[in-house]
Image (tube, rainbow, N blue to C red; front, side):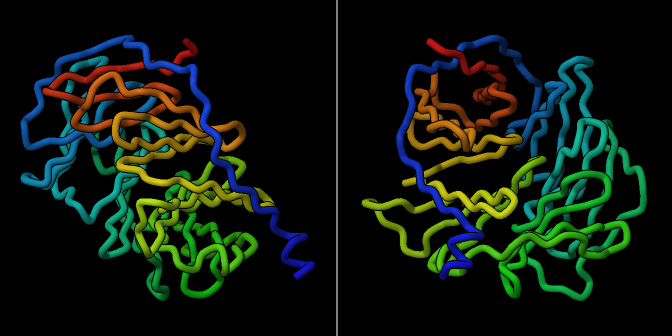
Amino acid sequence: MYRLIKLFTLFTFMPIVYGQQLVLTDSITLDVSDSYTFYQADIFNSFYFVSQKDNSLLKYDKNSNNKYILQNFDSLKKLFIVNPLFLVVLDKFNNILDFYDDKLISTQDRISIFSNQIINPELIYVKNNRSLLYFDELKSESFIQYDYRVQKDIISSNALPHELLENYIKKDIYSSKQSKFILLKSKEFSNESNNYKIVKQNNKNVYTYDIPHLDIYGWNEQNFYWINKDFLYYYDFENAPIQIRLPMVGGKYYILNKYLFLWKSKVMYLYKIETE
């Protein structure tokens, strides 16, 4: 027991900070087919949309007003914007990585990963042009950095305490420069308790944060955000989470560098988080 306490420091936070607001800075009408729904944005303010009807990914470049389309992009594919010039698509069914440039043109041969391993594809995060992070839930219960160029594990983190993970479904992972994160969902949903848990691992320390409910969520460097009902919650893992009332109900939301992208009726609204 002493060793466990020494290696892992567990914290749970729940206070909420107010006094922030969303200020509209820009809006743009986009000529996008009704079959497309908003998916992501990048730091150059390019917008990505997906169509389940056409099984395609559409990129809209705000600066040039150009559109680029990637075919055969369905619900079994996941996009990682490593940077606006280097995009990676994970085929979650076949464990294949495809690589594209800013115009959604293939730049290199696809790579098969985990040929001799069983890895939950939801627990994979592509970090850069050489490595990815995955969570080994079947064996070590730890984060592992994997070089997909040579198909070899590089670095393993300390295992997370089993008692922290039990009774939870592992939903998603994320990696920043300093930390690794996993989102957990309770196996028994309740209206009276916290149904989600974020676990942050930094060196040998482990921090946890409980969330009652969330409808939409996302990661952004050292931040986690989620939307529940009429409110946006923004958490930097250092200070208490910020609660901000949403300006309107949109069809889709995305957070990037303290900006909220809100997609509604073919208009993209850009809000900035500011102190009142």
